[in-house]
Image (cartoon, rainbow, N blue to C red):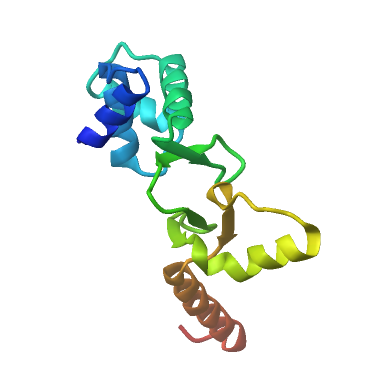
Length: 157
């Protein structure tokens, strides 16, 4: 559900909360990390006449206003989520594609080292780290142990 903060944020900047903007905000809120196509599918559940260009224009405006943010979580389209009051890093599981949000403070030492060594200030809100989540890691270890056991004892099940 759209909060009154969003409405007042839009009004303070001279914009109205149009039905399309409300639907896009609600879709982003519901889906969390979603591509424009995902958002369009969610919006069309309520308003079938909305097209992809409306979604892109709305996302662009909402991002300029600081209400949504995007991140590149792979090779496809960017994903959008509500702009939180805190910045976070996206941890993306390569196996199940789950996205975990980690507080940006966890990378403070790393970003300080980049700044000290290279004079480089990082934009962590667009940063994604790819790997394997805890569940997939455990399943992978169990699967590899099973495969190793089969290789060592081919006649046994």
